[in-house]
Image (cartoon, rainbow, N blue to C red; front, side):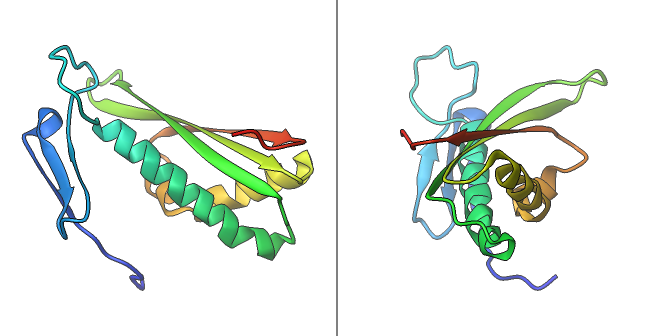
Length: 143
């Protein structure tokens, strides 16, 4: 695989610690998803949701021209759940909601299917994480 970009991050203290990109450009105090201490911070699932949403939305922009699609606007939201699987391991559960304006439902669904095939995050979780795609076609974008 030809690598186009590489980054690294370090976490200390686990879910109740701190994480930062190794170049120092951004960092977060972390809290567990069952935060009962009142400590403010971000949890790893939120960070994953943000990264996946941005990556998927970027892949939409990349793929649209190859399909002849010219949407007026689009957005991607990713909801991440974490739970315990039957074998005792922990796993993620994802719902990806794509909202588009100016595209037919048929074109939007074809577009999203293709994006899900090329998005690096989708490829990373494929076959290991339950992912549900939801498409909303709107007359006028309201964010």
